[in-house]
View 1: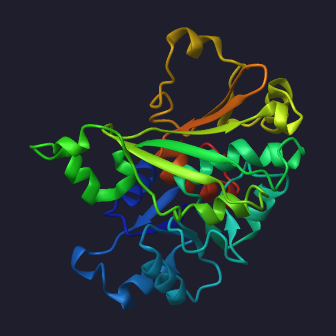
View 2: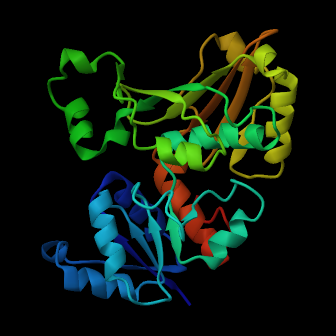
View 3: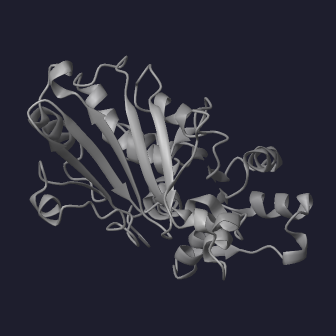
Length: 312
């Protein structure tokens, strides 16, 4: 028997990709809304309540409105917006987060899909905070470089227009008010008590993302070997998280980190580069894959008790 799935907001970047991934699966029946009824609350409510799983690929306010339309207790909502990522009653859609997370995802009908920058940051820091190697009150900073697809349709049109503005040809730091929308989940799901100083940077490539967190290992009383060992132990057996060798020789030989090397996968690569007193922790992923649509489909698979990598 096929599971019925509705993507509310399938015209957006994340919604389109989820729709594409699921369209080829025999175990899924996709419910579709007529183009002229996309904003019809009654029709959306009908489809939301007819679905076993409904993905909300909407702005925050619209996602909250969609939740209010659901009266069927069987419908599992997977919200790709930021609206519910730290809200009680919603399970964070990251199966690798901690022990028991998969069981929580299977049991819950309300799943909040992680943000792309946050996914990389949390996967790097949560094991280190849990192990006591990075104290919860540590003052950290993080830089994320990402492709422009993370900015949605409007930004994609800007970068792919016939005449590329000069300002778009170089990397562009943003989030300069230090209030990026991913910060609350970066705190809530790492166990940190001090918000990192976070600077995302968008550049002239379509997709791919790498978050870098510098740490003074000597000041923390730890070593690069201990940090690497904690990551390796936490993610042993995880099919979508790959802990690269300490001071990854291939990357060092190339001289540069390839931010796009995880593109078109649901994989995250974690690195520890270090000298005697400092380390750079790096997480690399596809911002449209494990950073968005891939994570959402993975969470759906876990919730339904299917092979976690089905379609991914």
